[in-house]
Length: 317
Image 1 (tube, helix red, strand yellow):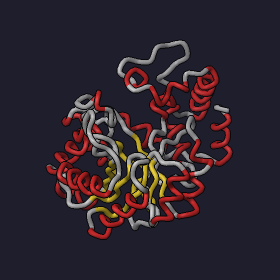
Image 2 (spheres, helix red, strand yellow):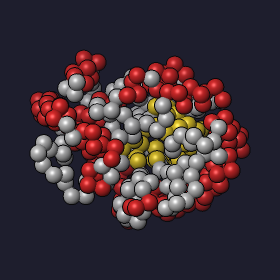
Image 3 (cartoon, helix red, strand yellow):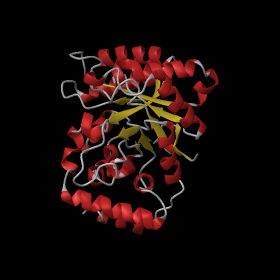
Image 4 (cartoon, one colour):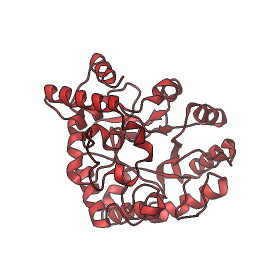
């Protein structure tokens, strides 16, 4: 699989990153800790991703209350030969239990990375991200703590997730930033008007999550129909409630027709659109089953021209 440079970090990442947010939970939501994929199911997905050439895996300390990191760690424990070939990302900021502490203070960052290393069964993490901004801690303190970890060899690179242009610009004033990981898709293009410009200018990698907008771009949500049982819109719909709109359904139906005419699927086409952005390093996707990787692998073969990219955007205007 093709790789791209992770900003100026000296790390190369596969264009597809396996998102492990549903291992042992549904993201960082304490209400769903213990749900999501079981350890056995997680291992099957990890095996399929590695076999497909995906060498970048993404998790967070709070995913599943630590279960996601632990499942990756147990998988690596059975495959020691993979450790040196895997690019591993984890994140911190969110609480790991209901009512638990949160944030990006120096002391908490140092405590959390140590616990992550133990769960992951590794001595170093390649990329460490602030999972969300922390308004209670000066950003200079956070960036300084990350820089210390790089100097000590505990991490190789760092950056931020769910951050805006102002956060990124301030972080760069306090030191380096290697990567930004925000939500980005045909249905969420806010970063085109700020964050992506800064990333391109400053040599910061951009590895977005949510390229399918929580499943909306797969065609699973239909006009006038209830969401499928067990789908994101029945469990954690908050981030996508605004998409229940007639114009969005118009666009989705047009996207389905366009994909059909091109001989592909909505899912593969939406992923190809995100991958084809000139400033996107790679995309993070979270398959719930091994076979969910197939549209992403197909997306890598779809060569979208700038005109086609623009046409797809216009479907949702």
